[in-house]
Image 1 (cartoon, one colour):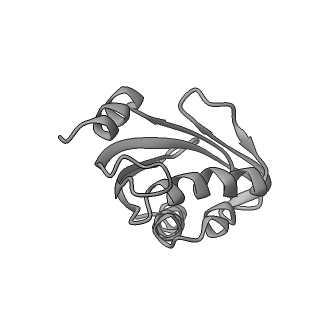
Image 2: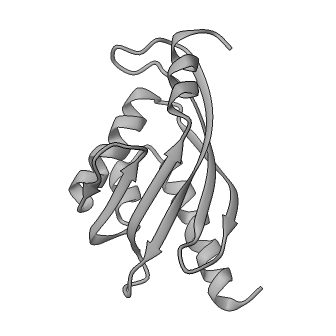
Amino acid sequence: MPSDMLKLREFAVRYTAAWCSGNPAAVAEFYSPDGSLRVNDDPPAIGRSAITSVAQSFMTAFPDLCVIMDELKPGDEPEYHWTLTGTNTGPGGTGRHVRISGFEKWRIGADGLIASSEGRFDGADYRRQLSANV
């Protein structure tokens, strides 16, 4: 495995651990200071404070949040594929367990951090899982 790919894989493993840490600021640290994270068709969260808020929203909704890295596809814009599991027991939660898979297409900045991430998952399936036992 080329050293660049090895470094990217190590980065992705640490990023995955940050999502599982319960510390949303730890997720934001993987982004350039003016980096962006876009989830599905939501407006992008720009800057570490906004990215922290996005991560916090998932961590609050799913206190037992667990993210698993399924695959890392190399390229000019690497794709980080993941599966998220958790129980929606945060404030106003449904108490339902969800398991969704998706991916983020990353653009890595000159600083070695994520300059932008375009994330996608099946929103209809996510909403279905929140509303019914599956």
